[in-house]
Image 1 (cartoon, rainbow, N blue to C red):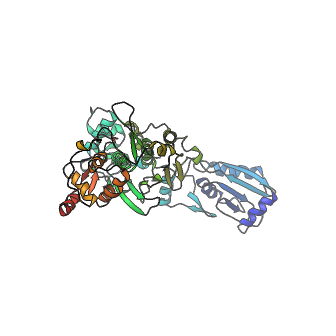
Image 2: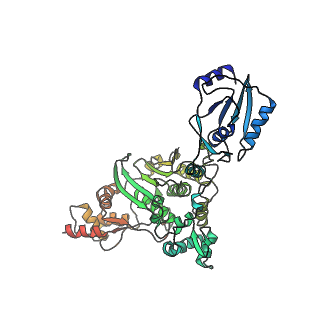
Image 3: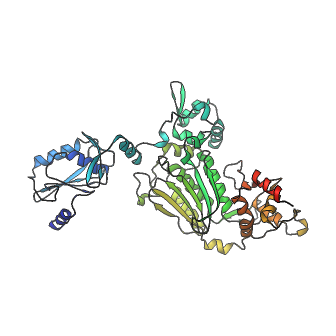
Length: 482
């Protein structure tokens, strides 16, 4: 402290980080308010109207102030500094929030220490990560009515766990339920994984996927909301992405072709899983967003960085906001739980010739994947996505085609009325070489109007997706087919 700095502080007055006090009275509530906030300094010997009153600084006074700090719960860490006849108490932001004193819990609101109400204390615990959403028991969940045994069995297959115990015992061992007075009580992690109807309890747990035309949120070409359970939500979001991100095929002589997407699906999948694991489920007004634009793919989850994690630590240190959810994903090998996910994602996009993933931090966390790749532009020969194995080059051997209509959507629906088909099969039968033509004139209009939908593969993670006609599409076809 020097004279120039003190003069500036006196001109500025009290604020979020500065408190003036003439005496030591009520010092404890100021200490805990700073410890619960960003830290701050208490100037003892200065009046509320910014006048230097002065105080006699003695060892006894310093010892008294240290005792006040030690008697807070937990003890507040402070440093003291003398400047002329002023004692400056520097309060360090706490690592073990929330802090309280004999008169209660306080937080810093502007230039004042404000006592927290019951609701504010609960909210503070949530924001600081002291209360874990996934660990809370939910008494509204009825085991007999709301639990889906099929989802548990699917989970056990993925985790390679034999069902040798009864179902309640398995749930207890997975850490998703407890037995209370003979009843099976689920925690929120169990509900997110095994509820029959997740939207009945948590509508905000869904993943919303959207495809936009251009680079702005103006024209929506396709949108899907998934809220079955967190595992299915991830699989269906990946299915959506694989439908709307360009892909080309490579052949190296092996029996199976290799798929090369414009953006690596594994990196996108990792980002969606991270969003599901680390989102703030106490935030009921928002859900995970997966958005596809012409130049990028963005994945956004509510909650921002996990409390205790700094921007410079992101990608190197792993802190779990929802440890139960992460543990369950680890069992089915969706995550490694080693804090390596961000580095793997960056490595994958680099191998694809893409710029690094851009992360933005606020009350939301957004990962933005660029779709601009020199490697992609150099290696793709045309916009055609065809399979040399299934797409015949001889017109004589081409599958017979239905009577063609001038309406592309009608032609598409006619091919799907009896059998589900992949985009490659549809393009072959429609004799379309260019993928963009197929998407803009056939696929997008049909999906926008709800005439077709894509199927969900039986095997999780499978990339072989097909389209099927809906009841609405069948009715449309009957009205317009010649």
